Length: 305
Image (cartoon, rainbow, N blue to C red; front, side):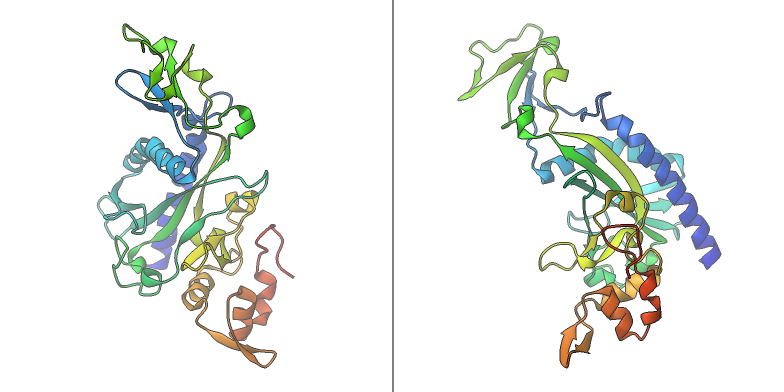
């Protein structure tokens, strides 16, 4: 595929992905901004509220929006391939009907706001398939077969304990009741609370922001989690939504080269060999200090000085 065609496919895909992101907030939210998912229901119409654990919330959010993603793919002429295994990259592979050379990787990334302005994600591995781009280990297709790599970001606020949700609760909702009622209002040692309607059940999350971004454009130059080989995102929410990451003024080639070499390349600083773990050091190592001015700060939309 030539560069002109590749860029056109990427532009078209991103435009449509932006439209999907703009529609999803209304799909998952009540008029008050609460999550429309209230819990799990059993055959006796008992509602079990959801834990605010991020792994649980993330998985249910993915299930919640998946029908919309399927409809989206169909509307733009793509088929979706799910990752064969849970820990494989990406979550979803979009393959263009009639031209299977055109493939897009899409990861669904969910996180909660740390405060009004910050949130963060991990953006996938910088080892394995990221370095060996013609291999298919832990990835659906080799990395270099994808036309582009994208994230569908979901940022939300966790409902505070002071709002009344102290633990997982069980409810019976009057608007769902028919003939069956719990005789003693208990399930084992757990009490069952009767409420008038589903809106009375407190949602564990609220106030959603959805956005679409090309992965490299929201990346930082720091790892995303502990000792694992994960690329971290920037943290400023406005910058995430505007694709204003550390590499956004430098380009994808510098993102690729930096993260392929992260922690492996070594330079001498103050007479000591030092592993390179910052973009500024990497550019100095490559003899390109003239590009320092294009490094965008991780926490603001200002270029690093």
